[in-house]
Length: 169
Image (cartoon, rainbow, N blue to C red; front, top):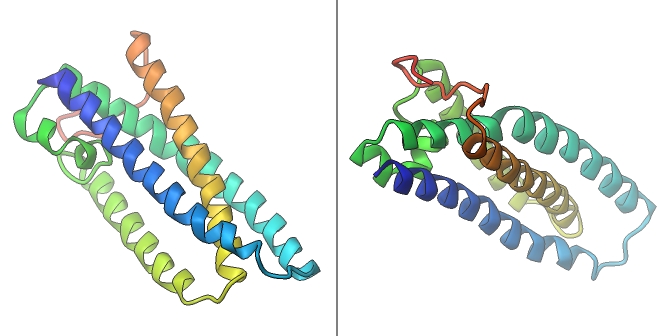
């Protein structure tokens, strides 16, 4: 049950991120059918670098990806039927997590939903520019999640806390 939960949890998170990359890339690609001016290119460059750093490196590589891998490893080592069935949500910290982790996970998700709604209101090519920068951050996140997942399950020493309420690691 534990191995199933860990695999399902990581697969679910990968599918969620991959689906977002696919859907956003289609919209981002459409932006290039417009006559882009210098301000569009400058905004694109700034947004891509910002999102690579803020979303890709800071949010995914330093926080989200190691925690998801740690929680998947925890799930493998501490099998539970409910946790295994809802493994993607478990790995993202929506339940069986410290109070702080649950609040952070829910708050970040709510913030992302608000940003999605606001970005959808933008006309092209601006929406495509923002979406392309998000694709860069999400792609970085997918790669970092893959690397951390391999590290978590291939080495006995994985120093990232799973943020579970009982304090086990």
